[in-house]
Amino acid sequence: MASSSALEFTVRRKLAVLVPPAAPTPRELKRLSDIDDQDGLRFQLPAIHFFRQHDARDDDPAPVLRGAIAAVLVHYYPFAGRLRELEGHKLAVDCTGEGVLFVEADANVRIDQFDVALGPPFPCLDELLFDVPGSSGILDCPLLLFQVTRLACGGFAMAVRIQHTMADGAGMLQLLGAIAELARGAPAPTVRPVWGRELLQAPLLNDDVLLPPRFAHREYDDVMDMNGGIVPFEFMVHRSFFIGWREISAIRSHLPSALRREATNFEVITGCLWRCRTAALAPHADEEMRMICTVNIRGKKDTIIPVGYYGNAFASPVAISTAGDLLANPVSYAVELVMKAKRQVDVEYILSVAALMAQRGRPHFAVARAYLVSDVSKVGIRDLDFGWGKPAYAGPANGGVVALPGIGSFFIAVRNAMGEEGIAVPMCMPGPTMDKFVNEMGKLMRPALADTFSKM
Image (cartoon, rainbow, N blue to C red; front, side, top):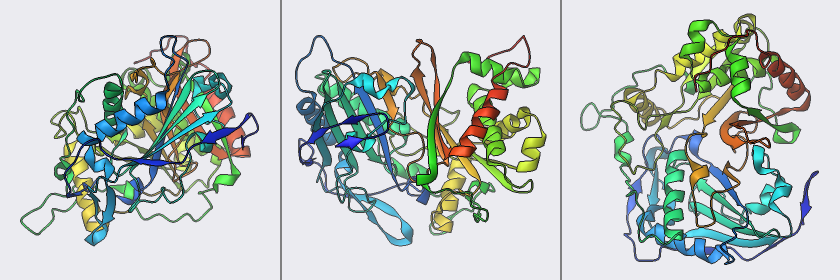
């Protein structure tokens, strides 16, 4: 029995099975890049799709999707392998062809009971994405887990869990897009997968000497959590905030006119969240607060990432300010710091990260007094059609970085109950802190000027 304060239902689940590639694949050892295997990416990343009943289809989605997954694994065969750790904390995938986990289930609940419009948190997620015993580690564990749950309304949920070391959001979308194509009857994926992890290896000065990092990379500072900034999960409250064009216009009205025109929506929202979260946490004035942004180099000028690359291709630059300066200044101060940090990322920057990883043993980014945001609102996951039409919701299965409750949030593309397009920002923090955060957000959601500018 799965239950929560808002929803209770029963799930009948079949035994998990391993789905191998539908045809023989190469047996080889493939090293991950120096961006892939950093400690901060060694966790499982979950996503979920909710599909309503399709008038033109009454067939069972589970065998269709299972067959498509097996066929796609012929092309993406490293996912059917297992991770091994080599010298120097280095990860490589052993392409064993063992396969990925697949679970099918039935639940006596309707899709509308999940209130999918605003995204996570979803009640009873652990029933829709069952943690198969022994599957959630990093080494020698399946790299993908799928669960298809048929719902009482005729719709279904498809949840996916992926080892983040293998792919970022864009890579995960590419893999899911290939499954969608083959589930609809295509003979092969349109986009040819590219491994190419050597592109993001630490650069060498000569055959055996690494080039030093070119940037300071304060996102990887060794910072102690001296004042209890990391709060245990059980003390957290979860809430999702909808930010549409009205809310963005209101925040922009608090910015100087030049900054209103120049800053992107991501930079405006992130600066707002950073300042409001800091005010809610009420740290000492001299404490350094950190705002980490993920920035993908796909599509950037002079990028070295080819079409079809599905590995991690992003950096995580950090904006830093004392709490006192962050709160004594207007929100424009936070927005400008975010802009400066985010816009320094290019190919040279990410290769400098790779150099740091190789030289410092692949450290985790600093989490004390830090907040991380990752914008997945434009990756296009809502447009994937597996044969049952577009999903009612598709995106992250929970609000933040799984391994770090309260530290990170996704920006998720959603449509609210009134049909308005916008971004859902799930937040996770202690109850009293959440109340303060809501109050601080309310202040910036009230327009300061009649004439606002929105750069969409």
